[in-house]
Image 1 (cartoon, rainbow over the protein chains, first blue to last red):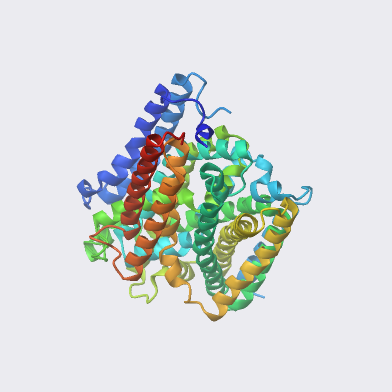
Image 2: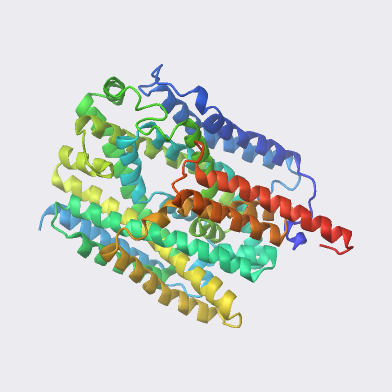
Length: 83
Length: 478
């Protein structure tokens, strides 16, 4: 069933960039946790740890928009999303 | 009849009617039943997926964890966000593969990609075993919500029977289209209930959410940082659990299968971009749990925190509104759970495993009958053996996440082999079950399912490489 994967062997530039963008939420919401595990300072009334998490959760859709844009602009076929 | 009761009953009946109406003009075949004819646009896909994500667990569990455990509950906010990020890459590829080979279910994917019917049957069985306790949880949750919010006017068994009898009816007639339509009602009610309560409760009792948090830090200094009130759930547990559940989310057979109903890969990619916004109401749910901890400490069951606080703070008709939202929030996820459990059994256990010559019409007819049978079983368990399946619930996520290497490597790596996926899946599933049932979860501070997933991925890759090397040595084309 190897050919089920399509013909492309090398990853297009746009996909690489999109993957780079997508790495950000994983870094900030997983790997950074031990370093932000504190109550102070309070920001917008939220304890720091909760603020940090909410901040990156809210930012993620915009990061994904950037990833979407990168695929559209740099992948030759107009992005893997086309079919 | 008190107003709360009237609101709850009317909502349940109206929702089911919308679900039945949704399938009125569609000629039902397997394609329409399981994947909505692959015609859902961005809005319907969003509603469907959002409908699956917000279960009674959101109402009761997330606030309950905030109440009794504190910061570890934050993993819920994280994992959804990571799940959508991963789905940006995974789901469009799943959709394309599904479109190309006309797939309806997750086991179909394994059968086609790895040319193995037995792998399909195994995936289907693990899927169904993971789904049924989850379904029962929705039933029990609904009974609970309706009984408390109608102030005991409706007994929980009556509410469960009525709500899930009607749920069966709209699944039976409309398939996945019915689920998507009822999700509209559910999303509106749920978001407004959580929005109103989450924003107003900290204000009413403490002046603002900031003052509520400050009061909480003073009363319970460690509650808002890891590990909160549960010393065994420290930061490493949160990291591994968020990663496990984030990767595992789209491995649930019903969530995976819903991807096929999109009308294009583009639809599903755009959906992934906007989904994280849907996480924000969870923050409000947490705030209700935290406020409850200050306002009414010492509740025996933390999962009651949301309802008890609403009960204490608002008039009874508003309680009815929250109860109605809670009821539909149980009906929608359970409708999609029962739909996929029945389709998996009919298509991937009966047809794939025992009767490959059975036609699509037979599979559809069997699926519909199984909707009633599975719901019947879930009802029996909910009424007579409420604790029998609790152990299965513990490994639900750990179990379905073991599909991850088989799905992702299958989509993006040519070198992955059937035997690699088979042994990886078996090793991962057994290891997760052993660790959980021998009370080794967390294991060395990590989520046991995550440990199993790492071993699973390693085995999958290693066995695949061994078989590839063998095939090359003997001169065969793999």
